[in-house]
Length: 405
Image (cartoon, rainbow, N blue to C red; front, side, top):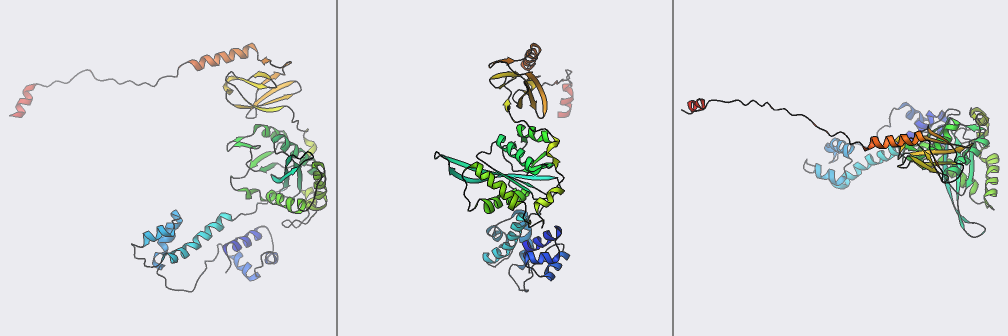
């Protein structure tokens, strides 16, 4: 009798297009077992020899309560004792163990998601330790890894920082190496990509929009969604870094490129059964030359102050007052300052000629005053009307006296 995980694995391998013979080789199960599993819509329940148990008449109740609330054996024992159960808690615990194991298997089960050519790439960072530089200072080493979902073509670059400008530069190097980029990229929930669950990093969105890339992040606490690059990071550490020595970052990255060209991208991949470099021509990447290189210099995130200005390069620039308190992207390019909020241009100015300048037109200052005056008006106070009928009904006392008789 095969386990739940083995049943899931056979089904998954078949969905990937593997033959019964290949599944036999990969799982070690017999062909008859594999054929039986493929004909099933759910795993066959394990059947023990029929044997009377003091728990038999309570099993339906226990199953229902466990599936509803996942109660412990102690709690369930308290509930079934008054119902007539005379067995031990050990018997109950053995029965519950099967439910818990099944829950764990379901929680771990992951169906591999195969992407179409050019549809998605996956990106991640790996920490590679600390090493002393020439003056004895410890330097952190990180590896940037990008894996194309269809071909499994890989790019790696080693850095001493994971900051956003470094990350964007790594993307540009990857695009040059691979010859283009995919329509979407899948990331971890890192601050360089998402500031919070519902707020993207505006600097990164500016980069993604420049290339028409749709960024995505995996479900929190579920990194297996991007398993291709997760395994890629482990592969770099095990197959490339382990047992090798490097002089500096230049030597590290030079050896890394040589490893990509002569090992990682020319091996027969265990899933595709083809070399990544051979599948690259089928990726249908957006060509590297289809967009001008992204200019990273002089970009910054700023928060609009209470006076409706942002401070950038030691000068202040006006922003429409309805954006007070918002985080905006300020770009300095070709002598012009462009301010964006949620991918919309909300203000444009000529760059200040000297530091300490306050850049705003008279009509823009007037708009701030108008906004301030409107804000100073008191909010309407809730009110309601209640009208009572002023006429009062009167009755003769003689009527009351008549009743009292």
